[in-house]
Each structure stands twice: as structure tokens, then as C-alpha cells.
Length: 73
Image 1: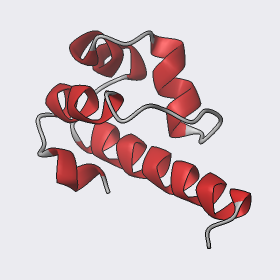
Image 2: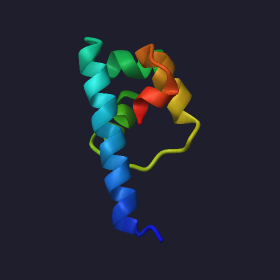
Image 3: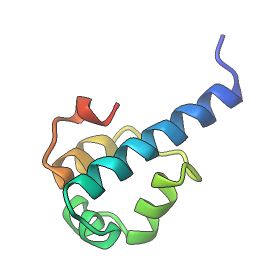
């Protein structure tokens, strides 16, 4: 059974992966947010693992980063 700490670790790991891919693509948080239809602050919260997110954000981020959704995991 998963616990809350496992969930937090997943959110932090996901955010770190998004940040890595964003930096690799040479994008600012603002540029990624614009491409993904998100607010810049949302990208920052997500990258720092400060907010959980809905599954609907995955394809939006993937499109903004020009990667397959599976590459975010």
C-alpha cells in the first residue's frame, strides 16, 4: 500500500524530470507554460514538487516539451 510520502516522492520526481527536460530544451518556465497552456507559476510549483497535478497536465506538458508523454516518467 502506498503512503502519502510515496506520493510526495513521485510528485518531486516528476517535477525534477520536467525541469530536466525543460532545461535540456532551452526553455524558460514561462516559455514552457505558454506552450503547455499553463500559468508560469504552475510550472514552477510542479517542478519543485510543491503541488500535485491532474493527469490532464501530462499531455499538455509533453506537447510543450515536444516529447512523448511517457518520457515525463
